[in-house]
Every structure is written in structure tokens, then in C-alpha cells.
Image (tube, rainbow, N blue to C red):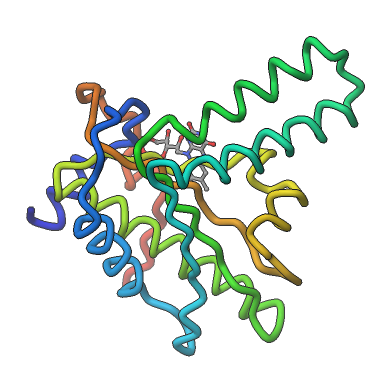
Length: 191
Ligand SMILES: Cc1cc2nc3c(=O)[nH]c(=O)nc-3n(C[C@H](O)[C@H](O)[C@H](O)COP(=O)(O)O)c2cc1C
């Protein structure tokens, strides 16, 4: 698929089928990530791929995190078990979930730029998935950023969770794109 067409036609795919995705396609998506620009070639990205039963350990960590959050917020046991169950199910929303992590840099600027490089990597992954006829959505949220999830992924120092990329075969149609034209956000400096 031509790059500009892929950019313009890609959209977040919230609903995918449970049909498994061949490993070769997942590997192509991961390879596309590492072509992203990255300052000083720090190659800051780290990936965790959860598929099939492998999603179970991810679901467990998320459920534990939801429980911890609900307890801190003072929910009663009924509310807690609802939150825990909903969070566990999210790990199974798609046949593949790829967690993308950005490693901390040697100073604050490098850490910031590593995150920027990882964001570019995630977009490469989304565009590659789209061009392969797959759909995905980049998700985060309070659970993703929680200390318990950081410990699950072994994050240290200023390592950052960048994305949970939910990937699979689309089970929804296209929506109209909502974007202001670039012209409204642009100041031209000429001559
Ligand atoms: C850093 C980041 C975090 C995101 N987190 C979520 C999320 O938690 N839940 C969600 O539904 N979408 C999330 N998105 C996807 C956006 O909602 C989506 O890109 C936006 O609605 C525009 O739709 P499009 O991707 O189809 O153009 C996230 C996107 C980015 C860049």
C-alpha cells in the first residue's frame, strides 16, 4: 500500500475478531517498528507480545492492578470484583496484544526523545498492520501506567509504558475521520 494512502486510511480499530494472526505477520509489524527514527541510535523500544494462552499472565497482572486501584479508592467488594473482572477481560479483546516500552535515557532529554522514538515506532506498527489487512488500536490508561504493571514488565528508573497495541482482523467498518486541517495549526514563515 502506498504510504500516503496508508496514513490517510488508517484508523483505530476497536473491534477485531479472535482469528489468530500468523506469527510471521506479527514479526513484520515488530520489524517495522525498529525502522523508526531514534536520536543517537538508542533503539529504546522493548516489546512484549501476548497471544493465545499467553494473554493469561497479562490478564492476571491487570486484574491484580485493578484490585489494588479499587482498594485504594475504597470500593466495596462488589465493585472491586466488577472492576477486576472487566480489567481481566480486556487482555482478551484481541488475539494479539503488543506492549511497547521505552527505555530511559542517560539524561532527561534522552528519555524524552526515546519516548518520541517509540511513538514513531508505534505508528510504523499501526501502518504496517493496516497495510497487511489487520487492524489495531493504541491504548493506555491508568492501569497501564500503574506501578504494579511497571513491576510486571520489569520497568526501572524512567522506563515508560508507551502503548498496548491491540491487534487482529477488523470486525468493524470505516468511520469518517475527524481532523482539523493542518492549515489551521500552521504558521508559515516565508521570505
Ligand atoms: C498515547 C496514546 C494513547 C491512547 N490511548 C487510548 C486509550 O486508552 N483508549 C482508546 O480508546 N484510544 C486510545 N488512543 C487512540 C486514540 O483514541 C485514537 O488515535 C483517536 O481516537 C483518533 O482515532 P484514529 O486513530 O482512528 O485516527 C491512544 C492514542 C495515543 C496516541
